[in-house]
Amino acid sequence: MRVPLSVPDIGQLEIRNVMDVLRSQRLSLGPKVIEFEEKFAEYVGLRYAVAANSGTSALHLAIRAHGIGPDDEVITTPFSFVASTNCILYEGAHPVFIDIDPSTMNMDTRQLERFLEDSCQFDARVGALFNKATGRTIKAILPVHVFGLPCRMDVILNLANKYRLCVIEDACEALGAEFHGRRAGTFGDTAVFGFYPNKQMTTGEGGMLVTNNQEIAISCRSMRNQGRDESSAWLSHVRLGYNYRLSELHSALGLAQLQRLPELLHRRRLVAEVYAKTLSSIPHLILPAEFDGFKRSWFVYVVQLDLPNPKAARDRAIRKLRTNGVECQAYFPSIHKQPHIAAVATIPPGALHNSETASDRSFAIPFFPSATSEQIEYVSETLRRVVSEEAATEQAALTASAR
Image (cartoon, rainbow, N blue to C red):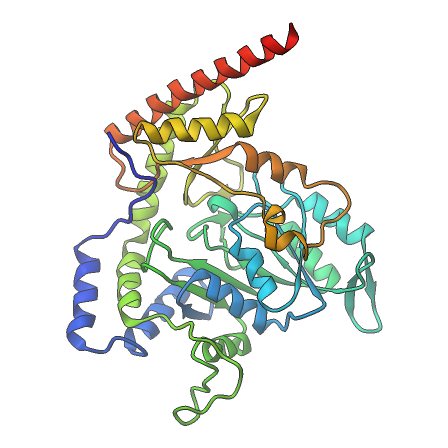
């Protein structure tokens, strides 16, 4: 049996919506984008939504709209998809990495608070926070809701208010997640979502920026369309812009997926619950945890190998699983170790130990809402056998080294 890592759930509603757009011959800058934005804003519960051609594009627009540029710093997590940091670099700004909480795999708010108190200084004369080590201005906190689990947004907001920092939520993996009954993506000044095919809902390629700030919405809507001012004449461009538009076809697909989102989220949770039952008895395997007050929106199902030499064991396990038809992927390499980022990042005193540990032992197994019981059983039994083999290999190595 071969089980893919991810499969988008596309039904007849999606096909009809896309076909209707094709028949209309209006493929870009049409009514479907507007409708998608309006209905998405309504779903999230914010005033404005701005569609873009990817979550990365939406995040870049957010960084730029908040005036973040060269000689500025943005506090973020090293345990994420690389795009969350790349968007900071696009504007010449510098990421400041705060280590993660090993239980949630999100930014550790205790370390965030310690960094702000011990390594920064607020200058009341200019109303800005400075990094003592670099002299640069810290402009924003960019929390990432990793794997669909919300960050501790209450602590992050309190710190942001105290130090006058804006908050840009990367909720690309967390559509439908909640923190104490409030949806992820509604806490910060701006938030972004992603609609890649492995996400909770998909537009093929696409993303969405959401905010309650009218000025940010207007500027981002302009920037995503080559800097055009919607109230001005055609080909009148009032600011630097980009080709970040979402097409009518993608928006039609998104409208259908958004309509089906409660069903898609429910089915993802059911698959996760089955995995939790079938995998819980496997020694040396750490499963995703649940926390009071947090409602995870299941994006991927990531497990961790708890063995003495986790990276080598994890990499061997991935190769064995793939050989047996079970697709899997290491999630995530620590961003601060990426070659193009190591030279420009600011890392507070102390190694990013928790992020590096998570990067060494984590991997995603097949996870999608249409997964069958037969597929889940096959993945679980294959994983059980592979982990047992790796545990035996590690024990043999320890025994040999002790002689």
